[in-house]
Image (cartoon, rainbow, N blue to C red; front, top):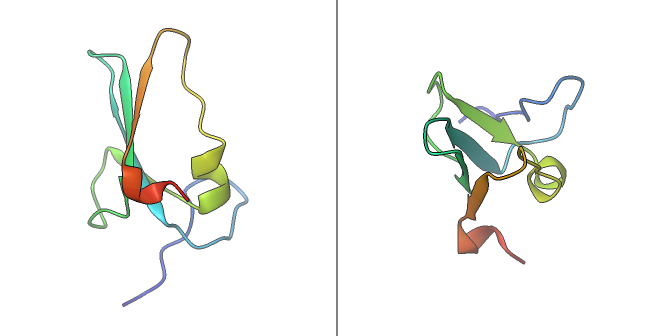
Length: 68
């Protein structure tokens, strides 16, 4: 299986999590690395997953398996 990289511009670290957004519900979900190729999902490395920020008033749902 090919290594997947973080979606953040200029980041070359290996992706460990997948981020998806629900714009209507003002929610972001961060979970384990999901299937590749989903057009509305963004792969993140551990550093970017830990530093995730969303607009004020949005809810962030984090999968517990990602917590150390």
